[in-house]
Image (cartoon, rainbow, N blue to C red; front, top):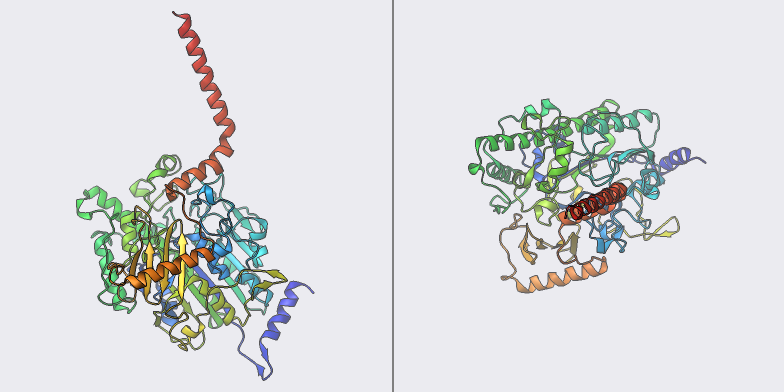
Length: 585
């Protein structure tokens, strides 16, 4: 029996019960934004126009205390498996992995064979499965989408790439950008716009299989708003002049709106990050340049929302919308890197001229100051374990029985998405076994009880939830969070905050609550030991690791002959010079 026919039979059987027919299992659409702050979304307090995502929020449920990892691959690995990233093989990004951790358990940098994806489980249960966009959980044959449960796929296997030219690298991590279609090297168009292309492909898959009666699972991994920030001009122009007052004003505006929407306490205080510049100290030309960067950032998010709207409209036009569950999230907080170390390479690849920012061939970044506004009202941003790096917007819409427009404040986590989708699809979770092979057990909890207001939490007040990435670490327990960030954002020491009262992490409670502080440190040590978390080598910084890995993984293997010949030529010139010098004496 072929997989297609078997899937149809399985799907029909799953829709039956002994009493008769039940409601059909839902279609599922997962929408993953890249590097969005929680308040980048209008429904979460932002000024950027995101009407289609906001409509999902009005019809669905917003989660105001949802956490991910602080960078892309670890989050995506947990999203697809429900397994904590040190247990699924993505203990760190390959680019920022210290050499001492290479080959250690949990630090492969891609999914390990003893993990099973939600797409595999859904396909086994009769779903047709599709993915378009960023993948970033492994390019080994066993990790490409066909082997991970996707019937049809077009994916970018790296951490990112240009949004106008699919073959242009955004940093020199590797020789080329990896694109795969249905598990084979893909031939991409000479030019495109990433968000439009990914939605075109997703809609194309759905149209091609429109007569297939089985429910579908569609995953769209956008590159927006990963660097380089780029967007169609019409979207950028909408924000001209919007950011003339600077990042501090925007950060406060977003804080007030998020509080008004009931997403944070009304009196939430904020820190001013040390990496935030003084807007008033900038020259007029500097302010104009910075305004343009944020206009491009907003335009890119707006353009992505437009593409979400096209996908939603297709589902409405084809009569599939009413039986579709939507999940929207960002993979981590906004990026605050300044890319100073990359400038030498960038100048050979891109322009950074203000009037060209956002267009083809131009490279724009957000920078740490605007990232502080995008992360409002939280502290820190991408790569770090403050709430600005870890707290993500989550919307789940289309679940029967869910109260439209409601907000769930309970502590939730990206590992909860897989068990939630399995519960909605009526698919049992693997209990340590999959097709006769031992696999990692799902760590997350189904959010269905929260969605249907049958519960107010999925974790007990004394249940710890640990986290670590590149030496930045945290532990959540009830309303409290233990957190430590390495320099330059942090001081490497532990701090304690009550997130229910102080989500901005402004008031350290370690001296006021020493017993809790000590107990949560023990909880973290237990987490680190049980999950194989390795200590960072002395002197480790992500920037240094990226440089070393780029040199050893790309530059030296690619150009070693050129380097050798260059060195030999240099030696030969020195010898000739030395002999001539001796001959003149």
